[in-house]
Amino acid sequence: MKRTFIIAVIGSIVAAIFATSCSSVPKMSEPVTSFEVSQFNTGVVTSGEQALENFEITVPIRRYFGIPAGPAWKGNENVDTLVRESIDTEIARQGGTQAINVSIGYEAKLTDFMLNGLTGFIYAPSTVRIRGSVIK
Image (cartoon, rainbow, N blue to C red; front, side):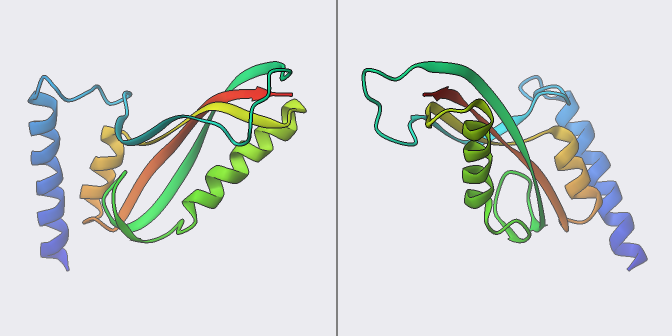
């Protein structure tokens, strides 16, 4: 157990040093997007619709036994439900009828990867970022 932990810590440190030395790796505050779907609507848009305002929502995803912004074995199995509920909540908050030009991105920051390495690939945090416009 102690040996596994030490190996995980050393591996995380080596990965962090390697990652920070690469010029193509984003800064810790910049997320890495592994998946993104863009420009879809939640319903049929007619010509009489009025745009209310744009929105951006971040939904934290806590998963286990996997990698950030990638496959995992446990936790938040219903990510699609969380995304749909977040969009529906934003539509209701603005008093709209649907969302248009919606983009959904699955992201992880460098700190998420470091936490994943430190825990021996047990904890795999990431974020789903949802952007779009609400219409009425």
